[in-house]
Length: 224
Image (tube, rainbow, N blue to C red):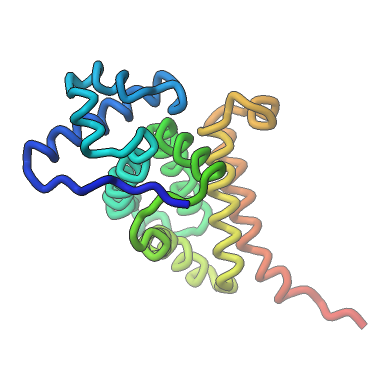
């Protein structure tokens, strides 16, 4: 099941109104859960009449795919600049590049935790939100982010990970970051809490070891 916008605004005034509503929703998600926010609350926060909001969105849930699409644009911009503050010419080894990958994700997820937590929980309960070509776009984004890591593996003459190993590498990265930033006040994240520096160090080491498993399997003596 998917949720979609009633219609896409074309006039500048309508676009500005929609942006005000989305900004207000984003702000309010940092204060309370999505289930606790009403159209009336949004109208009061933005000064936009409830009827005007309902003309653009058939219900409160119809805001979510539009908010997620707005977030997706931010993520695309973030990905484009992902390696700009990292000296690829100096830091040629795999470990510092994985650490950069982990650290940047931790910060990004913390900044956008209210939106990500809301969308994550909604999709778990109700199914995917309607975003065009989202899977293809995300694969392209992560391919770009992983290129320097894979290049470092090649320079260190390590076995290039297969498609399944890359997928699990990303799953380990993203699920660990999500658990910490989106649900850090719940168990098990709350029980196993460590500071950010230790978290980045340990997750980096774990991901590096996992990528090195291909070499371990390759170099393992044959049994007789």
